[in-house]
Length: 587
Image 1: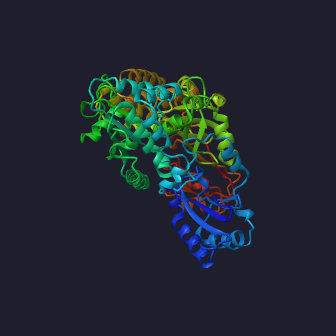
Image 2: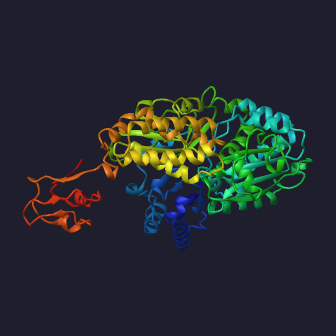
Image 3: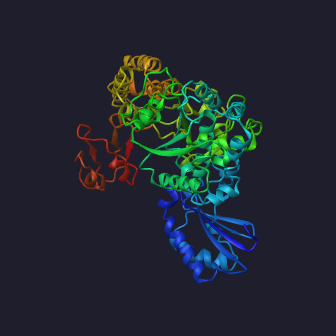
């Protein structure tokens, strides 16, 4: 940024757009033009849209940078723009009460942003911004100074593992694909939910990584597989592909070599099973998304029977960094067997919800209480689910373990999609396990019996437990089903579907026992196991609960204690919430 320039950066990822970011940008430009700041020689003001900054719970985030001094404003609305222009831009006085607080420094400083680094800094729709950050230099280096085998060797040395699923070594997978005798090969980039921010904030990195991967394995055709409803991701990726093609980074004879490469979009359905690589290929081929039997693996026989590599957008975004900075640099980050960083979505009962990137091996404590700012309402942490719907539930006692592939496996979880959901003392673990099983049962493609029937039966058993109808034999049945599904299901969805149940039974068995033996939900969440009772000595007979009860289960005369008919009570809790005298207890 030039010394005489004022720079305003407005977060326009999906969250930023939802927070009226487009209108905020428009108002900034209008006020800047009105005050002549857009053409001033002394102080020229530039307004730039950028991708997701990560701290989605504080959107809309806006940076104002004057003479190298940055002020970040949070929760910006259109009504705040004029005052920011008047006081900060014109008079040089930042508005402290609107600026981010000290915890924002914790949120940013404890992260290690590699792939997310340019997001929130560059304009994702301007290829020149990407080029200024050494964009496409790694591609030029690979194509003009390295053989495909040398590229694969460098990726292998980096020990980069796939940032989704089981974490197979990326370089090894590429090597297997390149060694196949069939010379027609394909490479696919899967843009999943967690990868949306990368596509929205730094789409050229995905494209560059995809092209380098194509060169390494000997593919001339790449595919971007993405849900059509990811409108902003699709829009920015399409613009980036168009710009890359216009600049000669896509097409024929790239950088004066004989290498040709182009990219085609493939729009997937909303099915969760499309995250499984063989089901994804079926979808691209125009078939119903259902997994294939393996072996052969996609690297041997994939799309249309040809050797195929499937990497997600996060994995491919690491490739330009590895080729550009070198595998030696990359391998200094992370742990012995899990190198680099990982992007997680941080959600649930946590103060700082958003998107974070940390070095492999970072402890859950650092993420939850450092980056995440701790638990909402300062309540106690109960569990953290890592890896998406089929990830395991990790108890507070394991919070100091580092996040890497090996430790997560020990904890009964997976890296998976990179989801991270935080639960506190008010959550019922049995209900949480049931919630995830409902999703997994609904999303099961139904092709194999263990998953199709296993998820259905497990959901039935969990429902019985939350409704107080279960016996100890039902726990035995859950454990038996979990073992069968995890060893005999056709694909990763079925094999990992029992994880929430297995880990919750391991670490929170007492909650299951309370539901079964005592017919009691310790967290007071399961409706069927809750009893609302009016304490006679505290009831003033005001009649509020009587009037609000939708089931007409409460009776009593005015100014005299009321009574709840348990046979009519539907356990909705409206009486409990409306009693200002705290005369109703929940047991």
